[in-house]
Amino acid sequence: MYLVQYNQTGSAGEYRLVYHPQSASLDANTIPSFRKWKFLAVLLVTVLSASLFTPALAQQEFAEYRNVMEQGTAAGIDAERLESLIVRAQERGVTPDQLEGMIIPAVTLAENDLPYLPVLQKALEGMAKRVPAGSIRMVTQSIAGGITRSAEIVDPWMARSDVSAMVAAVSRDREPGASAREFRRAFIEHASYAVQQNTEEQTVRDFMDQAVTPGVVERNAISSVLSALRALPEMPTTQDDPGTSIRLLVKALDSGFTPGEIQQLPDAFRSAQFHSELPADRVARGLDHQMGENIPAAHILENLFQGNVGGGPPGFTPPGLDRGDDRGEDRGRGRDRRPVTPPPHN
Image 1: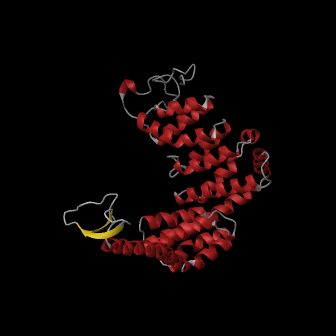
Image 2: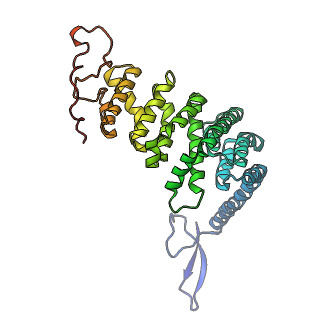
Image 3: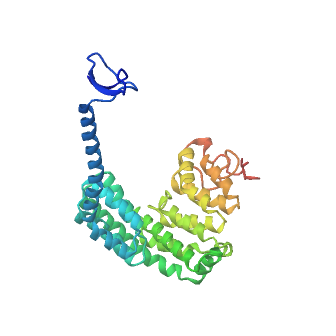
């Protein structure tokens, strides 16, 4: 290895090039040879070139999606969300034309002041899972169609004087109309979700028509109605007996269930089915009975999660809630014992 070394033997001092064949490392008194410097210089140029070239290349590729970006922002879609979508499309090899086909339904929704985020989210999800572009386009079109039809149900309902009064009552000091727009968007999204879960549109319409009871209006419980709409497709009785689901949810609303308590009803219902081994219609009657007894919502949920369909002490079964099978003396046991107090709630 050639090293440049300081020579202190001369009167004026000088540097000289010396050869050290056994030197394996550098210390503070040595400087790398020219060959080493040349290698480092080439490496540095390579790194700088890559760092300068990559953004330029990315910008060039991004420009190919400019039409998608301009269409979306012109319709009112958030620019950051579009950028995220384009980045994902680049990563997954989705062409600008394919991406445009995926999000045209979102553009149409935004132009009509309808919720468009479910479409963008589904497009992102599809690309993340490497679903073919054509399949993603079909799904986003279906979602957009459901949102459009749901708006036809929600908009007349939101225009009702009692609904408008509830929305205004919870707006407080917010900008006029802001709460109305937020609730409209949320109701449309929840109604669309129900339709996507194979709930009949007429079932959604019937629920919303019946949900605004005097008790709901008195408490301005518009948020509870929203939670109940979300819970509608999740209730175990909705597919086979939608009328029962509507009745139970409306009764829960009228009984003062909070939004969080209503959200738990579907899971509590299923838990009651599992633990009691009763069919859905018997559990529905038990839930109806408990609400009719004015048992607090928290106690009702606790009972259902524990499989206590009747709502009374262990073994109590209100008339009509027996299993209906032939179990000899066990059949109907405890029918005549009525609950004195609701079960303890921790």
